[in-house]
Amino acid sequence: MTRDPNAPLPTPFEAATATPTLIPTSTFTIIPPIVTPLPVVLLARPYYTLYASVDYDNHRVAVDQAIAYPNQTGVPLNELVLAVEPMLYGNAFSLSALSVNGLPITNYSLTSHRLTVPLSPPLSPGGQVTLALEYDLNIPVKQKANTFGWLSYQTNLTDWYPFVVPYDPSAGWLLHDFMPYGEHLVYDASDFEVYLRFADPSSAPVVAAPALPEVSGEWTRYRLNAARTFAMSMSREFLVTESAVGSVVVRSYYFAGHEDAGAKMSFVGTQVVGLFEPIFAPYPYPVINVVELDYNDGQEYDGLCFLSSNFYETYDGDSQTNLVTIGVHEMAHNWWFGLVGNDQALEPWLDEAMAVYSERIFYEYTNPGLLDWWWQFRVNYFGPNGWVDMSIYDGVSFRDYTNAVYLNGATFLEDLRVRIGDGAFFAFLKDYAAQLSGRRATANDFFAILRQHTTKDISDLLAAYFVNPH
Image (cartoon, rainbow, N blue to C red; front, side, top):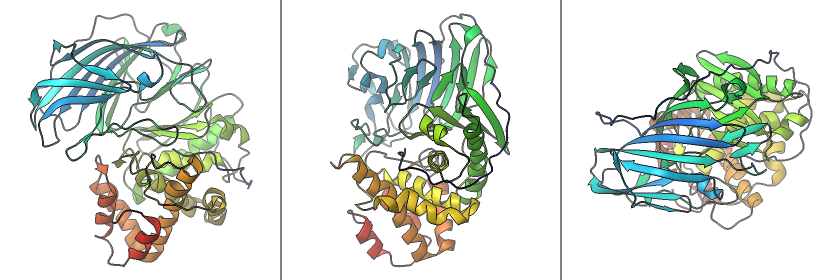
């Protein structure tokens, strides 16, 4: 996630041309309740199956969900802990049924955004359990600082379903408290199979989703593998510009009057995929979506990111804009958050500093004449300082947090690159992405892999930028 920094400095840039189109949606009729069979083989990752019936105009969603969870923690589990983020929005979540391996239970605990499901007997290492949940979402009105919710012309489903949070044998279940800034959630990479239908198919909205739609009977099915999240945005007013890079579909969703900005983001999306694939790793998902939203800044999810409508409104054809810089930042999170996960609350620099520095790499390769502008506009203007490895709970202001984690983090990466040289630095980035693909990285992982690529002394950099030893 990143924030609107300061007013853009204009420079001419020729945007790609594209034709806005609407993506068709499928129709359906009511079908019987879904029965999800128990898995018979141990899964590589948690597997989420969701059937979501959306009443778009009344802002309600009825959901049948199954979670097949393999215990890969190495220890027996007496319970599962799930994050239920809609619980943070008043009466947005209503759970009507919960079962474990087909047996209904009522001795669960649902407090704040934490759902605790007891397991008896405990789930052994290498074992697997299936949860089934039935619940209703009463989607709240979207507030400016949130992505989840509805507006008169758009509805967003973000962190909308319960999910099992990661378990660390040394720290327990990784479910942190909400903070007004920064992200507090931690995710295991999981596989998703999402079925979607609308109460009124004749007026169904255009859906931005992180996977390609497939007609499956009277539902639309989306399948996404090895992702942290499955977020969607819907609107009857979306215009869509589509392009592609190899097998990756790039879609830009925007509103009337913002056609130039929407086409620009489609073009930038192709640049991002084409550039970062050889530098970092292959793009991990089938689709990359950029979605306009009445929001303060930008927000990332797997295969889908939101950008502030203000960025679209103020776009004037230049690359020296928030639309491009923050757009690149949010798309870079598909590598640093999606492909390589981390604890966003306790070690946010591992995705945020990397995403900021990815902006620098983007300009370096696509428009090197703008590098000095980028450093001033995005970093130096704010006087970056503070410990790069602070958490979201360290009691500082939002400005101090971003100055340290995002901006001083990018400055550290620049100093590191200069110290060890481009060859070692880019070899490290590629190896870091490869070794930790689908996993949850820590700072110790970061520096352990770094030291496989350099023997340079970086102790002074660590002392200058990090409060914790590495």
